Image (cartoon, rainbow, N blue to C red; front, side, top):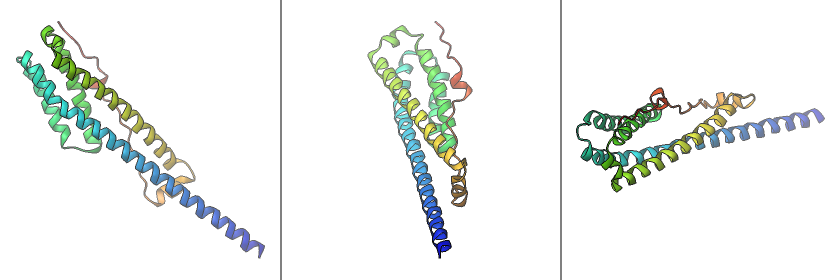
Length: 182
């Protein structure tokens, strides 16, 4: 009789642990999805700002069409994508925006334009918010991936097909310093 009671207690502990592990993994997966949705919202805000910025610069620097077209092209490529492909396209867009702002630095009248200054400060705010959202996403993904990989919760993760998530990383074009020439 005592053996049955001990076996029942052990079974109850294992079941409670399994349910707790599963619920923790679901919660972490949902936080990953929420963090990714937050990044998407900030990317949409940045994408909506870009046409105004491009048109403002175009008015002052119409002969810089290659730079302007690269920003527009990068923006349209990023809009139709999702997941890792979108993050890569958004990274390219960030590099193109850096080049656009470097071009803008060459035009004193443009730099003094209140409209340009407002757009530039909005873009800086969005980029800062986006950087923070990416940091949060990577922190949540780290917690989620840790839980999936660590024993014994890895048993529950593999049984219920929880898959590892990728971190958001910047590419070499964003790491490169933008050159400003006067």
